[in-house]
Length: 297
Ligand code: Q46
Ligand code: ZN
Image (cartoon, rainbow, N blue to C red; front, side):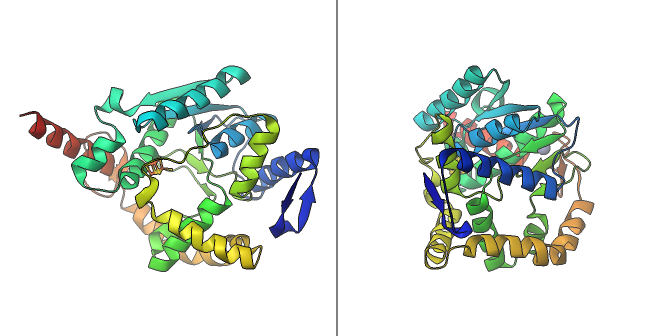
């Protein structure tokens, strides 16, 4: 059915499905991501990675509910929400929903416009904040996201090109819980994008195939292209880059992330941990509100 060049292997349907589930099990075990009794909230976008993750966690016997964030990115968001809801309904799973516009008065296109930031900047910080908040408020102690090997290698390349020590210190498949933060885990780090798409197709999971229309300014797409070109010439490069860093490089940067964590204090508006007085999410909301009221005058 499918070859995976970095493993120098070709799989039939059943062995491929087993391979994917086994890679997730190994990622969870080797990084001690999940334990008995954990309440897991899976960040579900309606795309292949998050739906495959939700499916595999269920098959591995973990209790995991989904969280869908309505980002308000036009038809793309409407359709993504439909895939997430359909999966939950068909599989009898609980999907928690948070709607950015309904609950905070703005969506991602408006936030990007009002703040003159790239949509992905506003979107990324909103997602991180709202996933964590929804987990804590819902009594979940773990947030699981569908970041795969390609995503993580691309983020690593970006962080290395800037030698961003604090980001490198935080780039790890599991971030332990700390004051105001649920544990964060990335159980798909051992699986590539193409494997996740194939997994969904073979399991009959319908997912949002369209890319987000606001992804144009997303730097990670460029990093992915570069890594794909390298991978094409020399299969296994991406995995060697990421896993080499996790094994040999990450520890050297962990102290930089610790220093940053030690400076965190509750946001004066929402109480989430932040390095400033008001957290980035609340500042974003304030700027959008000011801009929208200015326009209304
Ligand atoms: S949803 Fe948001 Fe992504 Fe769209 S605006 Fe960018 S970050 S590309 S994963
Ligand atoms: Zn805040």
